Image (cartoon, rainbow, N blue to C red):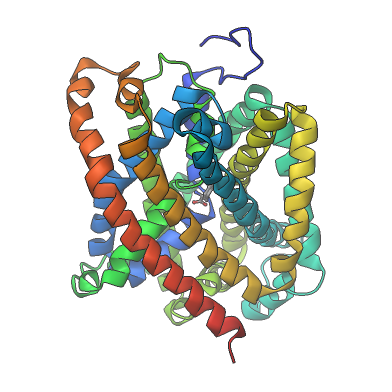
Length: 448
Ligand code: PHE
């Protein structure tokens, strides 16, 4: 892959580096914390099937849309949308930067809890009273320190640059995550409750699928999990050369993301069912991961401790590489707009986000509302991206053909038709539901 062509824009050094960085962005708390529960609640195997269809029909075309804008302009979102669509489209770029701010602010708080769990697991083992422990981890001043620690690590990686920071971190961290997760899945298979766990996770229940809310939730989960709708994939692809085969990379990234989410479910449910902890799961998704799982690890004694520590380390890895991609959107946009040095941009951006994160670090209710709002903003951002690439930007289909095979060239017209006609209505539908969910969450937290 070539180096800078005269300008100062950075490039990914290797193809695998780009793929792992993008998979690192996609794979995170959304896969290992949210997906298993959304799937189990939303109809098990039927939901998983729906999710695959959405990933193929909406996720991959949307990712390709972001790629075409990112690589086509070689700029971060604000500049990219301005270059390809004119001044008013740069507002969408600003919305992406805002969304990145918002997500990272609370994402790093949750990542901080995960670090705390791993540290506690290593130092003293998992607490015998997991619900009380969860209360301790998430209240008081403690979560602030862990949040600041995660932000510091994120800023450090981003400040080192695309090749030396993001790419290098992904090359080390992502294989580690895959190895841990596969080991955990094999181990979970040997547990007594494995069959019941799988049966609960993958029961083929069609009735939930008739609920439009479930469809909207599956779509929202897909955008969140694939890091779409806020310019992450756009920004990463702006560091690619024209030789890169975009559709191949998008397919690999989307399936890796799905694979990790699916396998996480194969770990989580056998563990919970082996110990008869299914009652704890139904309460909330936060409780599921942070209460039921540590509860199970405690019951399993020494082996449970080792397994638990590995599980939380894998989560830290996933969360950190996602956090890096969120900060990169903000940093790259600041660099492109102001030409200031990367180090300054990432530190200033990181400090502002860390400050915003103090609110969710100190209030779980606030965090809940932010999480819903993030999902809604992603759906909105995804909607405008589809409209932009389908109807406004010129040259998207030419950009997609660059580096692709001839066979793919013939698919481009139907891909463009999908982006124009299928994506906007489906995504808009998901966005409306997502905004209703924000309102509900808000009323639950703050409305009498
Ligand atoms: N995809 C990440 C996850 O699943 C979250 C994320 C969303 C990261 C949007 C970047 C942008 O955890």
